[in-house]
Image 1 (cartoon, rainbow, N blue to C red):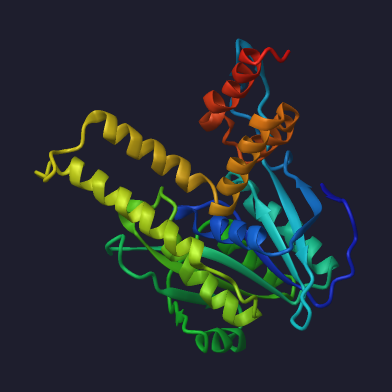
Image 2: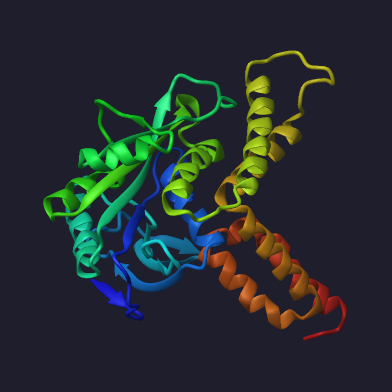
Length: 320
């Protein structure tokens, strides 16, 4: 079920676990950590037992069973602080398999002598998308809550944390591992859109707790971009008059496409993809590495025309 690529010697590690969910708050916060820190993959959770295909996929007329989502374990060795295990699941399974999957992750965490499990989640609120997102906490033990309150987080006195980002803490508690969930506020009307302000809220707390010294500037820039695009889209949908004139259908299509592409990838990944495109234009052999990167992030369709154009350029140059 869990295949280990390597067996690093970890010192009282903390597990940060995340899956996709509302506002991609948990998932994108974890991806950001993976991208900016020196995390190394050391194990893979084969999740075929928890996901059952509901159909087949068809590409260029050929059908096949879809690839089942997996989960990946990464580790980061800190100099003074406890080591960190980062688990990122590609998708959440149906409810009936959630607890079983959580047990598999917790069992592996316990095997590695994990002391604390941290998860992230979204907290939908009636708020404007430009408002600051506040961080909240819910923990398995009071001493952990007290510690995180010192980092500016508010205590969630009652409520519910749905999905695996909450369930894993309950399973962990039953297994004797302390845990805490960090929640960030997001507007109700943006639950399907990435929310960098929520990521900022959570990562500031994590940064204070683990002393990562994170550079969060990319998230600030991304928040401003997404918020401006949402403003344009909302203004159009409300039918408000504008100066200059209202957006054209082409403008709206561009906004939707830009917003979709922008919310799929961390800034660092987009920059890496652009670098690989530039390298592939000079040396077509780099196209293989570029294709692997696009497939890894499941964005090949977004870049397909641009990718295929690389080979048209080569044909124009007489390269075969």
